[in-house]
Length: 141
Image 1: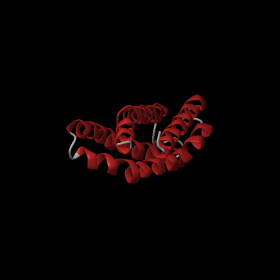
Image 2: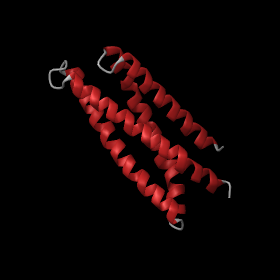
Image 3: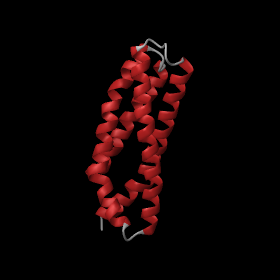
């Protein structure tokens, strides 16, 4: 396995571990929120690494590989969805904390957290099951 894929998988594991811990602490608790806020930087750094090192290789290969092109198109939809959800969630969380829960209900924040976790999980599975495999296959040629 390439160093890049090992790093990306390790980061995925760390991100999922943070979200699992937050889920155990409860996103509505100060502890849960405090644990989650640093995850934002971890997520953004991870996404930037993929955008710089992984996706350019895959996109170039997809010019001549319709199956890979389809997989990238599917993942692009997921990525746009995840980016939108990440941004929305952290805006809600910041606002929720700043205004002491007056603007958002507990149910709303819980639902946003669950949406974010579900979207991230789906993206991670697609990347690891499809795109990372393709990347490994390409660099071994």
